[in-house]
Image (cartoon, rainbow over all chains, first blue to last red; front, top):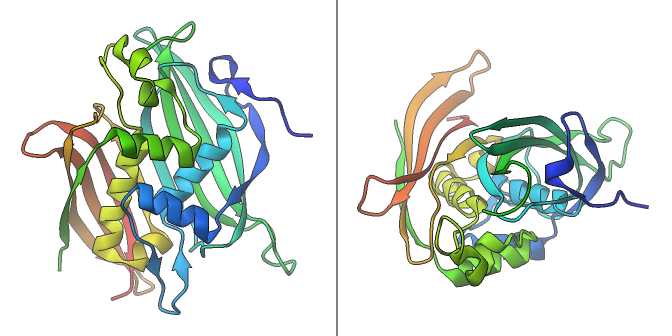
Length: 147
Length: 132
């Protein structure tokens, strides 16, 4: 049974969330790229690669199944680091945790870190390899919703 | 050799709605005109991740698969993009350093601004590895 969805204005630093499967299917990646007016890149072997922006968006989307954003919540910053190429169609999981919560100027800032890992290792050597990491910081009015 | 790229993109409510649908980020500030009209923005604004996607796409068009394979992008969202905005997205290569293994680390500055203005909506830095 998955964790219940919690509101972002109730989380605390160190809180982690159950690993969430990421849908890196060709259809999903293409829909993201169409929305972002992007295009997939191919490596030298002709393998289509999942762009960093799609990895970030999918990870954030996965997190939103665990965390509800308060109304008026704004994105302050975002980071993604590709640890290795992620072929379109790969099986992956997203792990996430709250790394920081702070307040200033009447706003609460929450930083969520994520790690994307390989999910379908076929041998013991590659199980759970890190594919990408990143973080996002969002801000919202301290004490509740409203933009 | 240094690489520089500029893309232009138009922000539309249709694109914001499409991103909300595919990403699952249905924050009302992005898609609910009545709610957004009562905020300090006076209307809907684009998801920061749309700008992040534009920055990443500009890097992909500059460096191809090397970006998707090894990229690191860090961006700060400084001001919201709104429906009707025309955006200019730039990649400016700053440094190329050869590592001991023969690969080359490339570092860039990236920026998304309102086209024809100095208003910066998102800024950041990117790093990737190339082999040539």
